[in-house]
Amino acid sequence: MEAVYLCYLDEVKNKLIRYSFNEKSKYVIQEGKKIYDNVKKKWNIYFKNDNPLNIELACGYGEHTTHFSTKNKDQNYIGIDIKGARIYKGAKILDESKSSNAVFLRTYIENIYDFFEVDTVSNILISFPDPRPKKEILKND
Image (cartoon, rainbow, N blue to C red; front, side, top):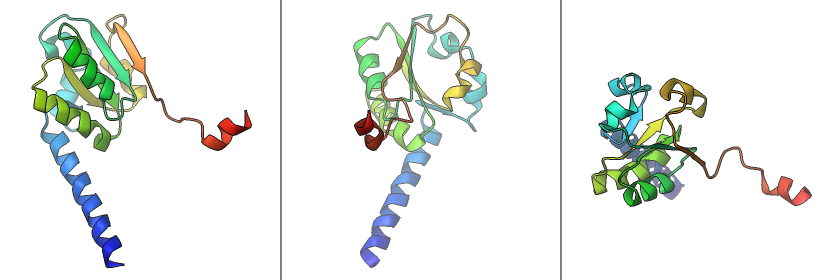
């Protein structure tokens, strides 16, 4: 029982570390940060350029956002997800690489109209949207 309790404490500790990083990171824009409201529909000001804007919806750990942003420095990338513990991994990668063309936006996808003007997004990537069908449902098809 004690081992399970200690394992649970480690999990909670790790989650708190991730959330603390996200609160301080310039690579995570989330509610509660001043920039969350200031950046709405002003991405060219945020990135300090008019480069094409690409968004990844339901980005999870941000593999695509981080990968494409390192390969295409002449484009801007925004990974969008509501799960802060997932975004943390991608934000860590951006922080380590000192990226200047990518960021993560922690919000519900339903809110994207608040953040982007019509015709300002060049590409939208949706790799693994939720909810995904359960294995049992897929077997019945």
